[in-house]
Structure formats: C-alpha cells, structure tokens
Image (cartoon, rainbow, N blue to C red; front, side, top):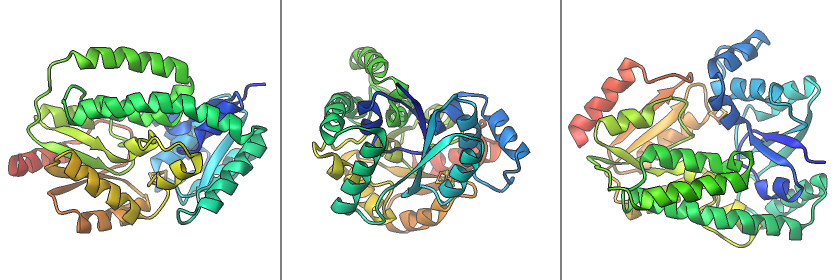
Length: 324
Ligand code: SF4
C-alpha cells in the first residue's frame, strides 16, 4: 500500500518512489502553508523561541500532513534532526533515521541506500529504474537552469522554485514534469531579462517570502541558486551511489566551495548573497565561504517566514549602489 512519507531534507527519493510511496519534503509543506501558525503550534508544544524556524515548521508540518512515516536525515544535515525525530515519534508517527556518511565514502553510502531499500522492500534494480525516470526530469531542470544563467529567460525566483521543489518533485513527479514542460515552452520564447548585477545565492533556501522580488526590483537577479541546484542532482551521474557522493550539501563546506567556485566562473557572477538562518550551525560555514570567495559578499540572515524587513532592504540597496 502506498504510504505518505515525510522527510527533513533531500535524500535518495528514488527509493521512496520505487516502493510506490509518496515523498513529502516537510520544508516545502512548511513554507506552502500558514507557516507562522505552524511555528506557533510548535512553540505551544514547548519548542524554544531560540530554535531555527525550519525545525519548528517541520515538526508541525509532520504532525498535520497525515503521514505514515517520517525519515529524518540525522547525519549530513541538521544538528537538531535527532531530537526533532524523537519528538515526532512521541506523537505516534513511525520514524526512520537516514545518515549520509561523514565524508563522501562509496561503501558507506552504498550501505545506507541498501538499508533504506531493505526498509522499504525494494531492490537496487527498482531504485535505478526510478532514478532513470527522475534523471529524465532532472535533465530538463539542467536546461531550465541554463536558460536562467545563459539566455536569461528564466528569473532567479523561478529557478529557485523549480530547483527547491526537486527534493520531492512536489510529491508527484509526473505532474511536476508536465508543469515543467509547459514552463520551458513558455520560457524558450520569452524575451531575455535585464540583469544589472549577476548574483550567486549561497546557503539553505531563504525563509523570506520576497527576497527574489526585491532583488529583481533593484535590477539584479540570482543566476546561481547553490543548494537548491544541489537538491536537483544536476550532474546526472548514472550510479546512484556516486550521485549522492557528489551532492555537496551533506559534506564539508570545502566540498561546497569547489562547486561554488566553478559555478562562479561558468555563470560569470559579479557578487554573492549568502543566506544564513538564525540559530543555525551553518552560520559557521558561512565564515569560511566569505573568507574563500573573492567577490563582493553580502550576508543576509532570516528568522521567520515573512517579507524582508526595512533594514535588510536597505542593506540590499546599498550593496547594489556600490557593486552594480
Ligand atoms: S536552517 Fe540550519 S538549523 Fe535550521 S533546519 Fe536547516 S540546517 Fe537545521
């Protein structure tokens, strides 16, 4: 029987689909609903004010999405995942812990994917069939991304949305692909967008509601959405184990830097906006990104799912005045 399986960040979604289940990225649920209410509900259960909003949002999204199971990524994502999972289990929802290896290691990654396959009752052959299907969609996402940074026919905001939703293909890859096909048809015949400043966006997806709109109002655009692009597995590697080893997000910030530097050159970026989430350990990684990236670098911090505050808008405007 098909199960609704929530998860806390990108994982080998191929396995879930091979087993005939419905993948649900809790982060996408959190932002698509009444996010402030979801945070409020978690705080009523005792989650502290000084805890990342995504964790509180994931918790309430898990409880209100009619899930059969939640898979938490307890290594290679968030330092809060273990505790979050225990809280979800306490509410009577089955949990499963998935770990990326501490370093990209073929044997360890292979074993972890096999363990998930065993848990969901699928063979590697079935997983690879699902992967072939998803890769045909990912190939179209690579083209959508190219239309953004090369032909400028896709905005940074649209690029962000397509890529960030590739973690679970909005729970329905066929519908996602149909909508992507329609979008690409329109984009190919669109006029190129103006770009006063070619920006790269680094870090986890923003919790701000209108960051991309504000950037384009200033005449710039985001031509590289770093982590979102990683969610879309853009390298199209046939070996599923390799695919999740070249995926940079779970590993060292230095692995991320290699990818970022390559894309800065390829996309001819002029400046970087690096996003950090309040109360997130990745703020420390951001220090190294800033140190090792030789481009104008603006760090924005968000906490709640809301529009940009006036101070952040002013900082963006000053950044454009100096660098555009
Ligand atoms: S933003 Fe940071 S603290 Fe929040 S869920 Fe993601 S990794 Fe965890």
